Image 1 (spheres, rainbow, N blue to C red):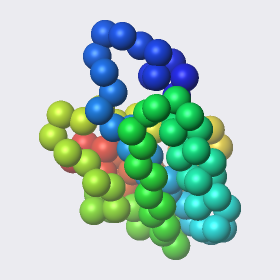
Image 2: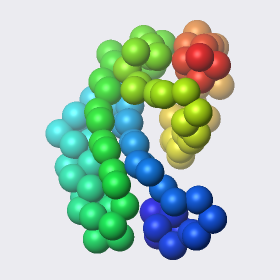
Image 3: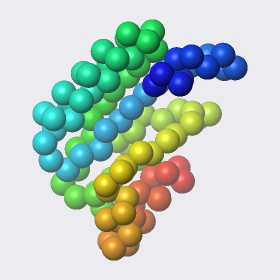
Length: 99
């Protein structure tokens, strides 16, 4: 966030984060609150949403509020490496990303 706050080339209109989880929604929401406070301290327009699924194969593009021209970044330190062994889950994620 700090790098986004201090870049000068293109101003950041809105940083949207959608956290995808399978359990512990309250912990995800608390993380969202901390991120929102940090974004506010850097004067970054920020939006946080939680999307919960029973299983990663249930991921659907309607869970994400994506607009044309938006840049999408996925950061998943622990989840993506496990999806390699679950082709149905990995295919669901890739299908959402393509749209």
